[in-house]
Image 1 (cartoon, rainbow, N blue to C red):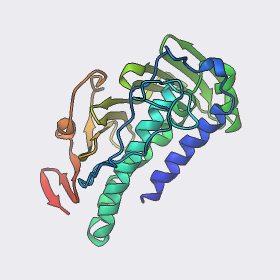
Image 2 (spheres, one colour):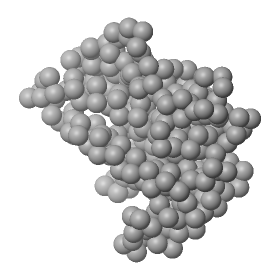
Image 3 (cartoon, one colour):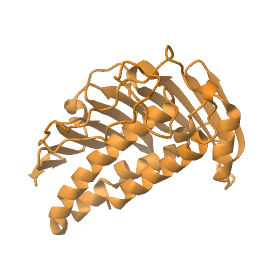
Length: 284
């Protein structure tokens, strides 16, 4: 199961790579431009808590303060860079939970399937990985490589809007409101009929990340909500059925208790994984 995490990360990196290959120098912020906040700090100073340890980011020569830096292959200060940092941290966090589940695979294989939506959901957001520039030609070139057609892209302030055909005749749109000062984004995807098919937000929170995904559940006619908070000390994921769109988490200060109202909750602290399903708690 955990191999899916790597697949998602690779797909996102591929999109960003082909977009990044054509990023113009003028697209990158200068010394005085917006720089994304620092990524999650590596726990190289002896984190034995079993929390999330993200790799040290490549230093951005334009950031003389040394507090930020961009991931290699991503234009600094763009939605795709912030999303890549979030996705990298999420991949590390999710893999830790899968590793723990694998220790008790005879008992936990159903839990691995339960966790699958959290692992797979970012596949729908791969177009977000190409927002490496404000130049429509850059975005179009990257998406065309993957057979996307009828691409229209424009930027107004920190709002990025993309419409496209996925190559199979399916029309979609993605609107992303980017908050570079918070290392955050709020994104909405719609189908060709204007129906909302995904609402997604992530925001850097302290030494970790907070995120939420909201999308239709065709099997119930309602909606599914995926919630997460993870930092260097704790990893939490929650899954629940909902009827209404959630309030924004941008600017919020929620922590690990963000997932407490979910039907299914995964909590990992140190080497201990606690799973709560319908009020029943199991510790691994």
